[in-house]
Length: 118
Image (tube, rainbow, N blue to C red; front, top):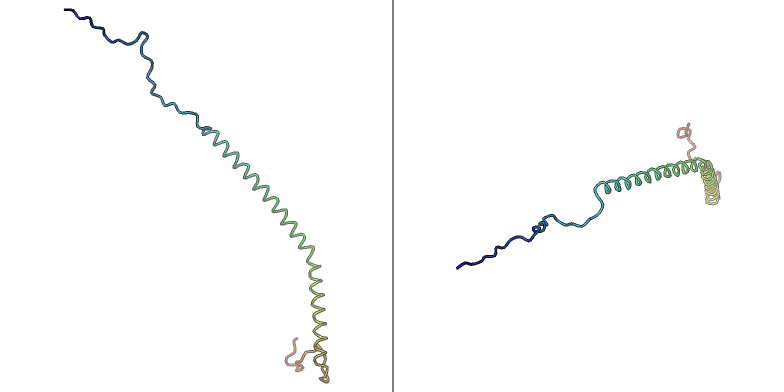
């Protein structure tokens, strides 16, 4: 008895290639692009800080010169206010001590030469 076996063989042209590589989609820019972006961003930040320093220095210079130019005016105003306060105090003292004979407003009460200033 003869049995005809049919052997299982690969298809004509062979099997297709085994796909063993991972098929990952593109996930963003590469390392060089990220490095270039960070470098550009930091450079822009340093530039802005430098410009801010220049502006702050200019504002400080302007404030200093304004203060220098205002000092004489402020001193004159302070002197005027002190003079007016002194005149007002002398008037109040004269009004309070009007009944005391020989009282001179704003004169030192220390008449002993030992306590006088040099």
